[in-house]
Length: 292
Length: 276
Image (cartoon, rainbow over all chains, first blue to last red):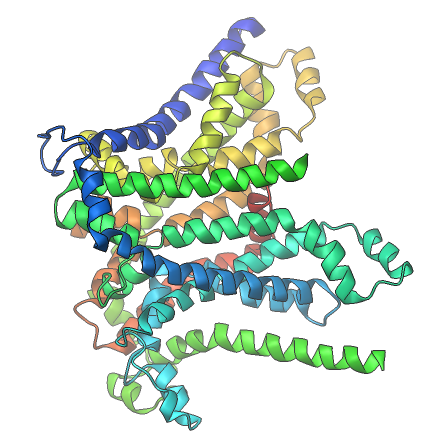
């Protein structure tokens, strides 16, 4: 079928197999990232192609208007929720790696929220948090805790916690399974050796388990941090960012598509990109240090 | 003394697990019962089971008004093309980069590694203008090409995997005169099977769940996918909690079934994907 020499075939394969994927990646990952930088220096409205170069004015606007960075305060709720969630997932991973009846069943059941459709999940919680008819207030009422009933989405002090909880609910099982994978890769003779030396289970956790999963821990913390910075779906689907639930990405999307100011939105996106990259570089550095 | 301590710890473990299961399943339970209730019943019966477990009125209502049928059809088309493309391009790149030495090998691998850390959500403003100038705005081509080009999970998974296929296999096939394309088709592609299974499931879940991409790039009524269909249904119908519950339940089913039957691949993928 192919009567070419292997040398020619090699060229054909390399050219034929790589051209399209590489072009796709350049067009949809690299080109946007670079043009974002350029747009951020213009006053482009996003409609048509008219734009004027305005230097760093967009950045000046971001750093002088408090409300843009003010949105980051709402991202903080997702970060705090994420930390609690990492702690919980580590706890459940540890008890589900040890001897326990039905641990595979528990693992599968706790993982379920992760596979459920994300928009439908947010809407499910919207119903659950409903002031009068939501199951949460109904449940509290039926067990005699009427005083705990709340306007979960209406109360300004509660709403961001209610939203961050959805993220915890959805991702706890995922992080747990990742931790279980890491815990199972710890060689069991380490624990046996420690037992012979008379270590108790708390010492084993402190001196064997924790150091062995440090890499995964760090990765998880960074993912929690960048995930919190990029929070969008939950507050947007729930309330369109109303009632002071706007996150940084919602502000960016609104600036671009609602207020037709792509230049300013690009500058906000560049700032977000830089923040995320800084955290990722820090994490890579930490990992590198550990490997040496 | 020691035994007593571990006994109380066992109790503690089961109590915390029971609490976690309650938190996971309580919202699901309330959606499930709500989906079978009439509107009046929903408001009056609280957490009790529905009077009629065969009351499918809400389901037909949400499918019709919420355009869920259209949503499922559109997302299925997008899924098939995007996932097939991901498998094809992913295996091709893994074969070319994993098996041959050439000048651009290092730059290409580096390109994928860096692309992996650029968060898609941040560059959307600029991606939007690319999609527009390619005339893919408000077509299925927009999301499909983004799922193909902007995410590099498939390359990362396949590149890890292809190195575990022994090179002797290629060499003995070459002795027998097989072409390099034949080696890709008959040796590399089939042996990447387990990675492909994992990839198909993970991609299916993430594309099916995605809201951002179809919401930004396909606002047309005819191009509703499941996420955007249920999103626009809830707004004007916010009062009909029972009908909304039925919609949620329908939307939950596909990935839930996928999970129940293919658990092993999902767990494998999640663990390998994260701990790279």
